Every structure is written in structure tokens, then in C-alpha cells.
Length: 350
Image 1: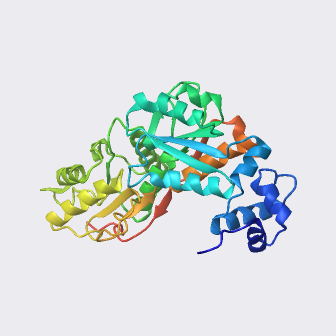
Image 2: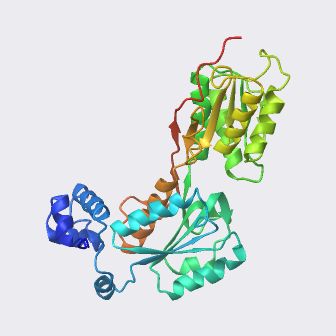
Image 3: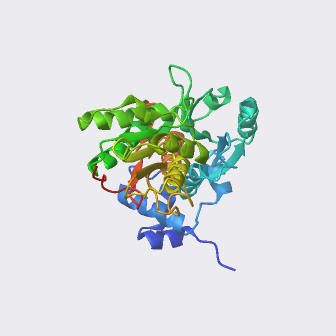
């Protein structure tokens, strides 16, 4: 049976003293330990799966060292659970544990779930959603330090800090990738009108065309939905029975499932991807984007990074160690990342 890592093991791995490890993992590193050393200590603690003795820390700091996380359906989602994974990475590295509750999209359960977590004496709360959306913040979240991840306060004057993906820039960079490959007729299957993310990605698409001084055809933008069959139907409308001179040379999709549908439609019509048609996704969904044939070029949603940033903001507020000014702002936007694979290529000559 493997021995549990100790503070001394962390100190040796990080190349620091044991007292420095204690200061950093007890939330007293700032002003006492160099930032670079703090980063090494937290990384070493994470690698060794080390956390300080929770009971001793609770007695000393009058804290439970527990963070409550409420999700709408992230726990049962095969995709956005990465947000909780990123949050838990940071919590463990700083000597905290997380307790997660999932309402399975029943917002009527939010207030009760928050009260249940507060009854467990959590030091702070995080609300996480599948997909970007506004929420009605449960009032119990205002009683302890709290943060929102992948969602934001529905009120005009936000009450809590939120951490969300930079969807406008993501949409712009996706379109820019296609424009840089020489495409000038790019269609957009833009998702669902009810989604807050969809119009932001459309705005990015529009911004990229404006910056490149490329005329934009309004009939090239379709609010198609999110699923594979919607992508298939949308692509058939754009491509079936249309001459090569009139069809788009690239289709940009608001998620990877739409891109799967587009690729299936192209195959049905005998079109080569990317030879005849470039296909661009969004999300970088695990076991979809990288296993497609051809492998899908896409914008990766920074889900794990959102969780890490949200938990860092929350723990800094709890421990009073915020030196970045985040405590005075209400929004952190995390950039998406372009992942270039095989489904996009130079625009075909006409």
C-alpha cells in the first residue's frame, strides 16, 4: 500500500522548505513566499495528491476547508464535467475539498440545495452550468463567498463574480481561420436562438468578415439547432442541388455535433472534406472532434480553465489573498483555443 504524501515530500519536490509549504497551503504564502515558489508548491501538492490535515486546519483557521459546488446537470453531463474537474484541481492544491450537488436542470431545487451545502458549513459556493446561460442567483449564495462558472447573474446589476468563455473572440477566430485559408463564401450554422452563446459567436463571425473587408451574406447564417441531424439538414439546404459556383466553400458550425452532420451531408452528396468543402466546429468535444474522419478543426471551449479560474477567484476571496483586483470586478472571460486538424483547407478554385 502506498504511503500518503507528507508536507516534507511536497517540500522536496518543490525545492523549498517545509515551512514554506505550510505557509502556502494554509493560505499565508503572499508576502512570505515568492510567487514562483508558491506555484511550484501547489503543483507539487497536486502531483503528489497531498492536502494538509483538514481537521487541524479547520481548528486553526476556523474554516471547514470545504467548497460547495451546485450544478444544473454538469455532474451527469459527459462534456462540461471538465469545469468541476478544473475547480477540484485548484481546491485540492490549496488544501480544500469539494462537495458537489446536481439539480438535473430543476431550478426549483436550487435554493434547497444551497441551504443543504450551507448547513455543512462550507467556506464558499460555486454555481456551474452546462452551456453559457443567465441564472437567478439563489439568495443563500450571498451569505458566503461565491462565484459563478459558465453562467452569469440574470439581474442587470450582477451580485456575484462570473467566469465565462470569450465567445465573441472565439467566433471571430474561427471565422478568421477560414478567411486566412482563402474562403470568401462561409456559411454559419449558428445553433439555437434561445442560447446566449449563439448570438455571441455570430457576432464574432460578423466581426471577422468586417475586419477582412469581406462582404457578408445574411442568407448564409442559419439558426439551425445543436444536434447532428440539424447539421445534416442545414448542410443539405446549402449544398444539395446547388452548383459549385453558388455553394459555400466552407461551413462554420456552432458546435461539433453540427459539424458531424455537415460532414455526413457532404459525404452523401459526394463532396470531399476539405477538398470541396471545409468544415469548422466549435467546442472540441471529447471523442467526437478528434476521432471524426477527417479529424475536425474546431474552437476548444476552455472548460477546465473556467473551473480553475473560478475556484482560484473564490479561494482568493475566502483567504483574502486576491492581489489581482478580481475582487473589484464582476467578470472574467477565458479565451477559447483554435485547434487545427484535417477538416479545413484552402478554398477550392471555382
